[in-house]
Length: 277
Image (cartoon, rainbow, N blue to C red; front, top):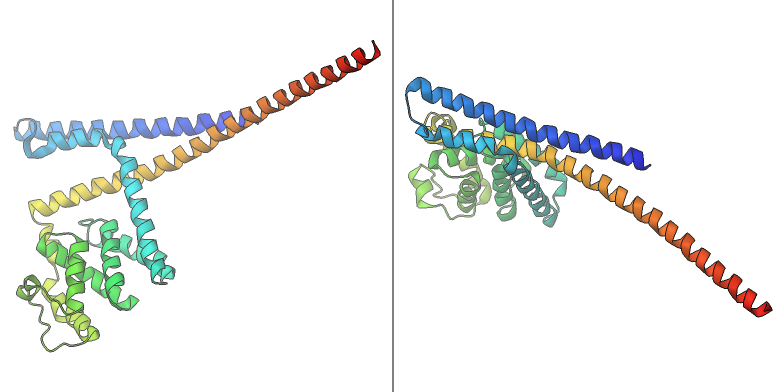
């Protein structure tokens, strides 16, 4: 049993070491690419933040667990939101929607941000699942248009649905005059207003700010994926170590019991001997 646990321990530790080395190698390669690019264009170190980016990627491993932990916490919070309103059955569907939308809109926004946007609609309105699936892409386009995040854009749309349209959305062309019920307001947003916002993500990605945001998001996605792998390995490592500790404890306890039994037996024999003396 001990040999089996030790073999598993060695395998997990080797995988962790390999993951660490791979990440460092990736960072070093990226750093080299950054330096070559700088040399080709004749720019000094640090131009356009390439040197800083290369240094950040070199330290990628240190950020992976944090990214994975934050993503895990976001999922738990979203699940709790659905549970609180009796809609926990939608969890897998909406999480998948967020992942699909993040990729569809070219990773300009994080899937965790999209989940938070979904939560805003769920918590504050009585929209259907079908309406939600129409509204979230509009929130993404709106976020790109305004240079904000999906959570904030979703909150702005929620306010419009409940009759509190902001001046900023009115300037963008959202007209809620004469629309007195939620369904009519949702239809206005998913109809004419959606048409006005169409293409905002593509336009944002043509700007330096949008491209920088996309690059940061793709890096964060990589950190999160590496972090998930690291967490799984660390959990496995912890279980194996606990198994070893418990096994050693059981062995020591067993030995201690045998010693105590022997001492008690010897005491009895001595007592009998004294009684016959």
